[in-house]
Length: 370
Image (cartoon, rainbow, N blue to C red; front, side, top):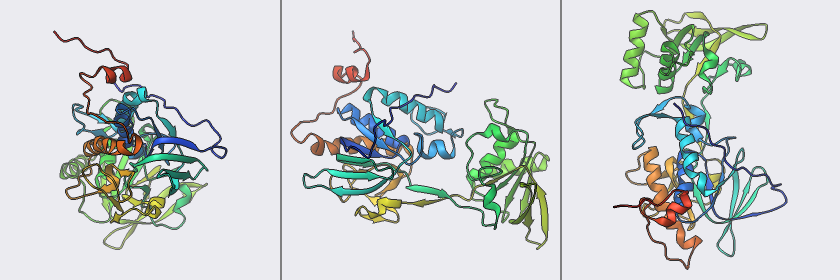
């Protein structure tokens, strides 16, 4: 059973009338950004979190809310939405304030060494430290380049799946050859393992060649289902479409033989991957390598003192783009920020198992050991 979704405080002020003073501002409300709230909270730091999406969870919720994740320590399996819900529950005691649906546009170092941040909604923050947890940056799906097809986007044409149940009982065409394309094609063909009834009436997978970048097990399962006549696979490219009464009725698929065939459908799902863009972060004066921020692995600081980068947006020798690696980075970044936030305070490592102070902050009772 999925845990409940926890709400989080959001800004209710008029951002054009005031500047918020903060010890820490986190840019990005994905899993790593949320865990950064936790690690800062353990050190008595309350954070403000800014995200360009209208909700927490980042790419986990935006791109695969229902897909299982298997490599979170001590959690055998959870979905992207479940992971987000649990992190929100975990950070609730620390009272972070969330500012959604806006991105940080400018960052300026001030004479007192704090940073002035301005957002796309005219928000202003004066903060001692910044933690960039923006994933791969602002991401956009690579689109299907067929003239006129864009008018169906959000209706019958989709580049991401938010509610799989919307496609139950429909004739679906999936385009792509990567993990997302294969995963969703198999998902809609077999139905969801937890019993949610979103099995499609029919599933046709289209890829430009008979070779895939998806996991071999997924490809083998797809071919097995095709042999069983439970789905179809076509080699070809979408080159046009036909509509009737403003509805997408057929797509034109041109095969390697040069023949163009009409494929009827109710919904067209395209998974060509994402095109990551750093966006305004690229103009903040940070050292960048291949669209990623260079960091010092001692504390994951960037080239500008007081600005840290955690998660997929950073790079260093041996970097692995895994959520659990981002969690580790958050811990060291939080301790690395203490000289900027509390320059006169000695900060000691405390354990949540034994620290009465941390038990008080977390709202739990201190256990008594015999």
